Image 1 (cartoon, rainbow, N blue to C red):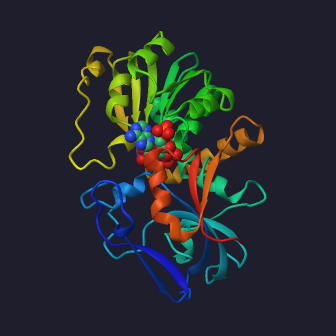
Image 2: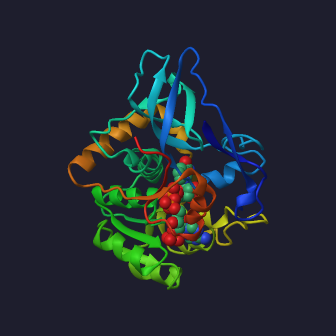
Image 3: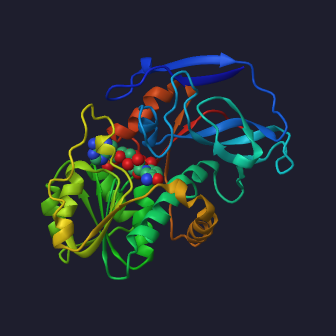
Length: 333
Ligand code: NAP
C-alpha cells in the first residue's frame, strides 16, 4: 500500500495536525513513459507553508484533498521510461507519500557514490541552486565587499555564506541562538555572526559591517530586513529569497518602513525564484560539487524519520529547531 499525506484544510497560522489527512491506497502501476519510485527522503521546505494557501503565487497552491507537494529522492522500482532502470536513485517532485509514479521526463538521476542521498536535497539540491543563483546572479558580490545573509544557519543560508567567502567577501550571518552563531564562524568560515534572539540586529550589523552592507541575502524579512536596510552601503543589492518570519502571519505583512534607504543608497532590491533557473542547474551543480570535492563547501542535513511525523517535522522550520537542511527520511533502501 502507498501511504499518503494530503492537505485537508488551509491552515490559519501555524499548520496543525488536523490540517492533514492520512490516507492509503494501492501502489500505482507506471504507465507508458512513467517511473515508479520508492520514496527515501523528502525535502521539508518553508515554501510548503505558502503552497498551502489559496491565492496567486509563483506556483499554484496544493488543492484540498491533494497529496502534499514535496521534492524528494527515491529509488526506481519499476520503469517504463528508457532513461531509467530498476535500482537507479532519482530526484524529483515525489510528494509526501511512500511511492510516486512520475513521468520520466520530470526526474533526474543522482549518484549515491558521489554524495550521500540527502545532500541532493541540500547543498547539491534546490537550496544549493537557490543560494548559487540568488547570490551570484542577483547579489553579484565582488571581492572585498560585505555580504550579510539572514537565516544564515539554514539550508540556503549556509551555502550563500560559503560561496560569498569563496568569492573573497566579508561574510556576516544572522541566526537564532549562540550554538548556530558559533557554528557559522567556527565551522562554516563566516567572519561574524549575529544572534538575532540575543542582540539588537541593527546595532550588531553596524558593528560588524563598518563599511555598510553591499549584498543582503534575505531569507527572513520583517524586522531583520529593516535592520539591514538601515545599514546599506551605496549601490547595495538586496536579494529577496524568502521571508520566513512572515509565513504564518494571519494578517498581511507590513512593508519595510525604511524602504527609502534604497533611494538614499542608490540600492536595488530584487526577488528570485529558483525554478526560473532550471535550465542552468547543471552549471550550479558543477561548481557546487567541485567546491565540495575540494573541501571548500560543507553541507549539513537535519534528518527526521517517518512519514507519520510529517506535520510536526515541518513545524521545526518555523521554530528554528532544524540545524541544517530539514529532511524527512521515509524509507531505507
Ligand atoms: P532553513 O533556513 O533551513 O530553515 C528555516 C530557518 O528559518 C529556521 O531554522 C530558523 O532559523 C529561521 N526562522 C524561522 N522562523 C523565523 C523567524 N520568525 N525569524 C527569523 N528566523 C526564523 O530553510 P531554507 O530551506 O534554507 O529556506 C530559507 C529561506 O529561503 C526561506 O525563507 C525559504 O522560503 C527561502 N527559499 C526561497 C527560494 C526561492 O526560490 N526564492 C528557494 C528555497 C528557499 P533560526 O534558528 O536562525 O531562527
